[in-house]
Length: 403
Ligand code: NDP
Image (cartoon, rainbow, N blue to C red):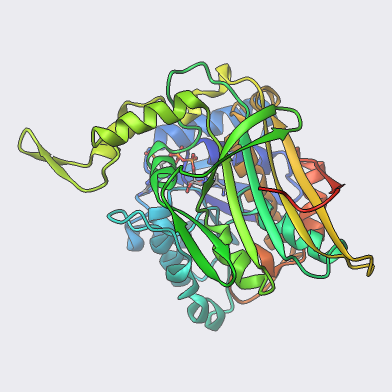
């Protein structure tokens, strides 16, 4: 039984708050704050209609640390769940430290003027959280989040070491739009246009964005082209799996998505540096995000499934030599929409955010300082995935992936 404050009112927040309301024995008092009060109120109205649970709402600019600290102190939650944008991670961590409250997020900090993903900024908060006896849990979404928990579950139950790891993120959903992103367009486009990086032989290997492509047959979806990308969990996995020889991340994109993105890039619409337009500074990518369909509006039309998982190869725990396992979840866009009013990309992020929060509030996961998902016992989290709408499967493959 605990009071929680969620910050941000987009698709991920909507799913998370609905799922919290469906688990009142853990989340007995839910508060929701964001930049636009109307969005908080719309989520609260949907939660009330679907579950009967009342959610209190507030307007706040999360980058205004004194205002956010005052709001946290006024509400007095046990945990702040940050589902705003990566830009707000550090101010929200600062406000949690000032107010003496635990913290959780789903994406690592990124400065607005530099498309750069790394944990260093948040890992630097380690001593401040530890000294205050507080816990910060980083990256409790699907990827990052579940993909790291999957790897650690395999390491606990199947493999003594993980030598090769491939994370495969497939969205087989069709939203019926010519071009739209399934989560925040600005963050999504910054991520996919950044150079690809993978871990090999103890160092990062960089290749041009979208230059390495592989076809893969995804259960529940069919064959899809996936592209090598950099994704933030590779950094924490390389740190917490020191034996890792090669770690890669792949994401599927349809040809139409790639064509649109190529044109947008070629004409300069994905630039993140300001340009002067009619005497006013605008950032082209922010303007593009403003005209693209809002991810939270895609729910009613999106059909199909996602399939996200890890393929890991290493020495078997039972001493039977080298083995390869594939562990994954399949999520249906229409089922996700039916349950929470949001499509599966928001669902596969919002549910693990709720589970991470449940781990912290029930004491199943506890620590003082800043933690990544890899540092926690995977078992209670994996058990909740099965009961909260993201059931997973594991199967042995004949050998390591051959791409
Ligand atoms: P949205 O853009 O839909 O929602 C973000 C919300 O944050 C909006 O309500 C926005 O307010 C609010 N916000 C932005 N700036 C501020 C501010 N200064 N103060 C208060 N609130 C603010 O994003 P998503 O729901 O798609 O994504 C949420 C988070 O989840 C992102 O960090 C994203 O990177 C992460 N994510 C993680 C994934 C994973 O698997 N780990 C996968 C997908 C997303 P407003 O409504 O006014 O714009």
